[in-house]
Image (cartoon, rainbow, N blue to C red; front, side, top):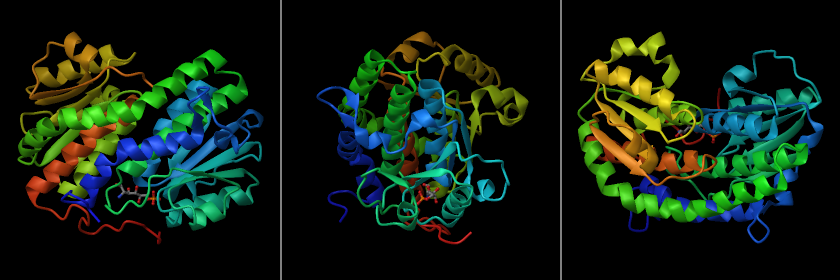
Length: 365
Ligand code: M6R
């Protein structure tokens, strides 16, 4: 049932504040502002490293997770798309743990990577939406994302719930490994707790602007997304979302890679979406944005209040989100990206929930 929404995708975008709050209540204890024992089904203090494998959007969630596990838990993370992971013949050690991320829990390559790690004696964790799935059944520890059924082929609420779970696990791992203090844990959990409310506010705030921006974007055939830090996987997620439902060619790049190739593409026919919260990467990203502007590129600047105040570069549009802590910014910045893809597809008249050639669950290689 789509309720009063035109598509399941739209419904699922707007469900995010509610489902994230549900997911968080499983992994954090809001009374004490501590990570709950549900986040410690793997003993992160006892492992030498973490291997993560997944496909598509779940892989991009894993990539953001890598930044968190490395930063907060000082845990080395090896991550690859499952179709490569399973065949790379990488040396694995039973002192490592492995994490598989899958909405459906049935993705063939992800399952094959899981079995490969199991054979190598690694402890297996699964971040899944469908708890009865094969991937969940074959894992030692299951971390449900509790997003509820996701019907739209384009993953939205599963992505942000995966992120909420990974953030909680990384904070918990940091506590277990002694790299996150009790004080820091409280602050981080408090930020997570604020997230559902901020998400609701942002969804209402940006909706009209995203719709009119989508009308503009639908006139182009190519779009480039740029970001640094956790905004880099988000740039790739933005591009994936746009291409899969609107069929507009899109690419996500690390902003620092601009000079190493994609800058040759910049002209007035390829909008550049710059994802830049006012974080420690901001100034670097702005200098990349300057390079785009200098070549006549059209910029869509997705930033926060502090970022909007700090840049004077001309843009085609600036989307200003509230200032939020770094730990929740990937979830908050997912919202404009999802809405932009959604409304662009609606303008283009594509089959938003069932895009051509795609299946919700890819159970063959
Ligand atoms: O069910 P899974 O999470 O394992 O699916 C992985 C990908 O097939 C999936 O995320 C796909 O990339 C989505 N259509 C993206 O929106």
